[in-house]
Amino acid sequence: MFENLQEKLELALKRFRGQSTITEENIAEALVEIRRALIDADVNFNVAKQFVEDVKVKALGQEVKGKLMPEQLIVKIVRDELVAIMGNKMSELQFSSQAPTVILVAGLQGSGKTTFCGKLAKSLRKKGRQPLLVACDIYRPAAILQLEQLASQVKIPIYKEETKDAVAIANNAVAYAKKFGRDVVIIDTAGRLTIDEEMMTEVKNISDSVKPTETLFVCDAMIGQDAVTTARAFHEKLSLTGVVLTKLDGDTRGGATLSVLHVVGKPVKFVGTGEKLEALEPFHPERIASRILGMGDVLTLVEKAEQQYDQKQAEELEDKIRKNQFTFDDFLDQLKIIQKMGSLRDLLGMIPGMDKQLKNVNIDDKAFKKVEAIIYSMTREERKSPKILNGSRRMRIAKGSGTQVQDVNRLLKQFDDMQKMMKNMTRGKKSRFMPKFPGMG
Ligand SMILES: Nc1nc2c(ncn2[C@@H]2O[C@H](COP(=O)(O)OP(=O)(O)OP(=O)(O)O)[C@@H](O)[C@H]2O)c(=O)[nH]1
Ligand SMILES: [Mg+2]
Image (tube, rainbow, N blue to C red; front, side, top):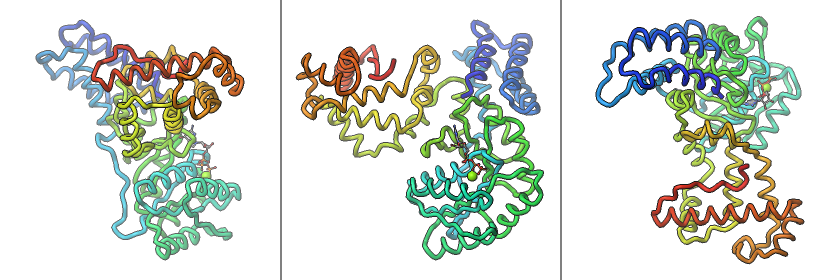
């Protein structure tokens, strides 16, 4: 995501390398490029225009102080400005002081509403809430089924009715939540077009009737500007409280991300980054800005890892590493955690400096499957002490996992390197090389 924009901004900002000052001339050329980069990324025209004007004013008004080089200064200004147009601070989901909090989810067809409802329910439950999912998309029988399947996957109750009255269903669901102690009601609605008066009136009636604390517009980031414009039309009818951008993992140019606040007047609250139910992130303007500028995003990475990991597990692992008892079984656990975190490429892309290297590296999630198969073909004893793996054992493992002996050898070598590195780290020595993570091509 944002790759194109990132590359172009980088080129524009490189102009300042080796320059001693920021002048009217050198900034003018860079600003033309920045503006073009934004427009190409499908950022709203007015937003792009305002953006470069603000950058210009700030850049020319600043003296280059001390050690801050013009290039660094301009990166800082651009970063701050990116953060500013996304609203500076993260917009938290609001909860009603009187349970239940009602969250109404609306948007165009296929934008990812139902998936988002499932993701949100899951993430709220992790935070100790008791959500209830409500099926108000009564037009397609498959829609209710889809929500039911998501609900059962995350083990969260769903409220549905056979009736064809979405307003009544929403109301009854809120009453049900009160009665059974569900503190957050998430209402999934049918996809609708703003030109469809009847459908728009229906969602407005639901809103008037249940008075949601949050009305979230789910918006497919891949559609870009058009989707942002539609959000505005929904806002006029529904008073949105926030926007959810989905499919940011796909081939999006990212323009929607930068335009939403300006065009709709409401902040992005969440971004969807995949089809899996874990692929939901709160929207942090600073982090997105860093990602756009290619500085990596360590914070998001850490947060994701934490979600999958409880503290106790982490401590146990650390202890094992320290005692040099890290086995293939532990390794298998780590692999599973990594896979759960979503696409590895995205994840590694958040590490500063990784992005560019990654472009030349072929990371294949399937390679993990191969590694897994090899480990599964080992006996318990072998997983604990790989030293005993002689030629015939290696042969047996290769056969059992449908791989080649070379694959087994490679994995063993990499595992050995990894153990050595861990040993060094725990002894406080700095290892200058990072061994290849097994499974990475
Ligand atoms: N890659 C990716 N796919 C997503 C994301 N969110 C949803 N999808 C996919 O988009 C498709 C549509 O998602 P739904 O949740 O059914 O969309 P909807 O808005 O409920 O659709 P309707 O109810 O038909 O209006 C599905 O195939 C989802 O798996 C996302 O963040 N990333
Ligand atoms: Mg749906």
